[in-house]
Length: 570
Image 1 (spheres, rainbow, N blue to C red):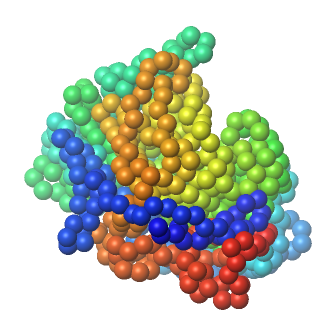
Image 2: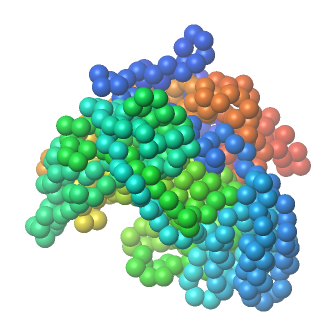
Image 3: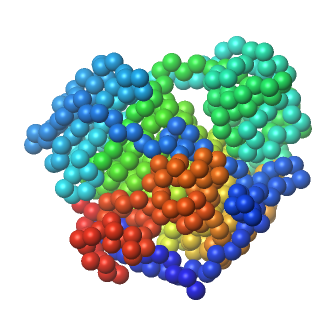
């Protein structure tokens, strides 16, 4: 029986290294490596299967995060540093961008900074960089009234223009890269477009979402008829009546349920959206408060109206609703972002990672410490592919689709040991489910989601009508039940190789190897041959990640290996 490789874990503000055993790896019937080493996929009768998630991340996946030259440096003053840091950000924002779109980085030297207000990047090509997220690096202490530590935010919104082309496929499977339209004459390679999926009464009814009733006996609206779910894409090729996109569509399009008016493709502009922005290598400490979700909070990082952004090597302590990615964000990587709580939160949970947008990649990150938070949630009308890889949480909840139809999430190699048997509340380790009348009618929260080699005590993976969710190689106990707020039973999704992990060890990395080759995997911090087990690059000791003993000793040559070695995060 092989042994799960040891990993450092953050519990409160203390680290432990633990080991656990898992059964021998099996082969999935839905995704598996063929004789040539390439991935093979099983599909249903309509062509639906597990989609290619490797397009998630900065610049569409498989690209190393950039090292942007420093243009301004700020030292800690011992008093409020907000104005000095913001002035440096504004000075870099006024510079001309280079050929890659970068204006420069603001470097915060090692030390203790105090910030009574938010730091804001609102111009493309600007990076806020500290000198490390550990105790000897850059620590920002949040003071004053509740606020967000760092915001990366553009302006405006999607502005569709021109003729909306009608989609003509009778059925388009989830994961499709190409689609047919009635007239391609207005479209060219490189055009940015929205693929719009209408919310129709027929589709809502097929899911039973027209039957939601609140505790007061009044009908609830899941999604409004006549609204749309939009997917942000670039045209990669035009041939005849076919458009090929830069990334797959995470939902299916069934003309029998979506006509009229049917799916459409339309050009858009978004002049205020910013790109090539990031925050990296620093820690943030907030006052340890237990406040209600309706009250102002000290939050960590928000991104809105961002294309190709990142956060890396970030440590947050006692922030709530810590990382929020807005619905108009595309191609973002969050790498080694760790959140620790030292006080128990009571009342409605807040999310350490709240993800909307498309092509979002969360890598080697965690939510730990005192309980009371959602570790990771998706929100409403989210279109993937979105990926969370090598995620750890000691919270009493897991990776949850929270509300109103998110599609295309991959939870890959998550470890969620404390998530309870919380079927009705959605707090199981994986919750891809119909949430019924929770939260004024959150209803079906996830379609076309995949949990891959996840280990957690309890699993809720359910099947929406006309869609699917998978739990492949999951180690845990599945739960079945009725829709919250009604007595209607909900069908289970697909459990494949339940109780035993599968090969390849990571679906995301294997798909990236297939599409882009070994160099792309190395670019995002994983070494070793494609198809082998994922081996992370060296990160801070305080980062919960997967280490063999040999890798641990390579990364930590001055720290003796021990099964319960401790070190404080701050």
